[in-house]
Length: 141
Image 1 (cartoon, one colour):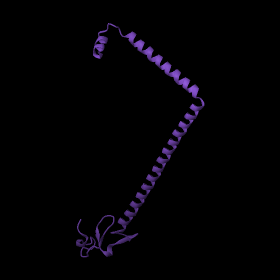
Image 2 (image 1 turned 90 degrees about the vertical axis):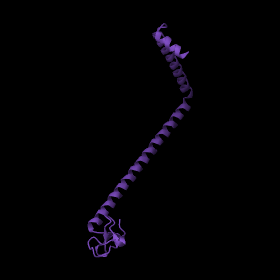
Image 3 (image 1 turned 90 degrees about the horizontal axis):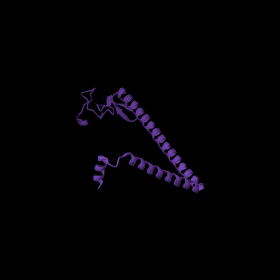
Image 4 (image 1 turned 45 degrees about the vertical axis):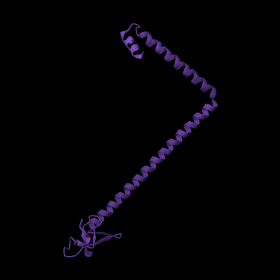
């Protein structure tokens, strides 16, 4: 971009530019300046475009703020639910410790029994003289 002091106004080629439009960066002289909220523009159209853009940016930022707030609120609610569930489980365990321990022990025993039965079923299904079984056993040894 050329130096401002070497530029001339696009509307008045014989007049040196004193500033550039805040929207389109065109060089403009004192007579062409359209000033809004202390900002200089080359025309009413550029000034209106700038105001419209500011409004869109502000709406977008506000929507992002609301979305971030909802996300944080959801995270806090989920965290509270997890904490409450853990507290309820702890309270239940402390109130019924012997029942829970007995149930856990019984479940572990049943699981071990199921594993043992599954292992026996698999072993019965594979013939002892299987070439495949011998090859696999040879690999292990």
